[in-house]
Length: 351
Image (tube, rainbow, N blue to C red; front, side, top):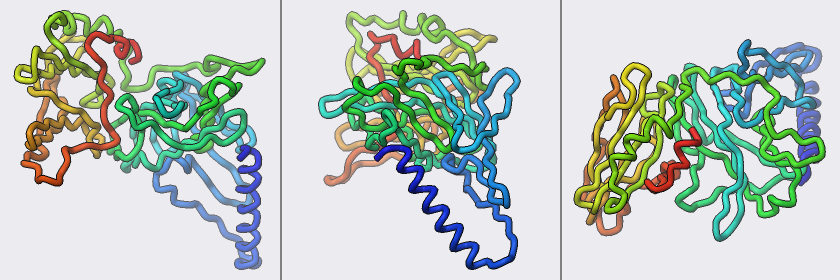
């Protein structure tokens, strides 16, 4: 369905609802402020005799405020940071397409920080994609390289990251692709005649984010691996929410001696080893957004450990340890952390 038709339908429903409300209230005047519950789909709404909408701010060096109506949306690009009135901060990390054997998808990768006072439920984040003003079908890939942003809860002071997807088999033929997020429009692709590839906004570094060259910072850690006889994989994750992404580097000659080294970096101490966790693990975002779940499974035996950081050191918290029944599966969730082979350093350049 075309975007304008969807908007007209929403306006028509609002008009009908308003007429019913006027009939019910008679000549009485009222002012209602809805409880958004902290959902990002309700960035800020106020009902009064004159309808206004408070737009989220793009973070610049002066953190300027933008107030526009729904007919003049605020456009955002990769690198922009959006400040919502409720205290939620979103940084647009990347956009692109994801292809597998069954379909092509479009995505927007986001970093979400909760600077408010209440939990954020990521399943409430509803991004709607349009290609040349036509609605794109929702859906996300289920292969191991997918990193969906859904399902987890972010507590105040914590943050998370992941991707929103839509199906886009005709990606190459589309001139412009956008994602609506509340009252914001994130530009994913713009090949139109007057298209703009980069953000016109003056972007500042998000509070808490550190300007670190991770390729250089973690080069020594990779250099310690003998990749002629060892295999392994790695990922980056901010385990303590301080804006520095720790390196989790797994390697070994076999499963018997496999170790996951956790490295961190700081201006004061440079590169330091934070700790080790042994055995081949699968990593998932913790359901409450606090650190990662490391899941070890072998021959029907499972151990789940929460990984966080404190004072520059790895902290391990046992979540569960059990023998699986004959009809039970090892722990899994949609919030699996994508790993890269140790021979592929490209992930370090994306942060």
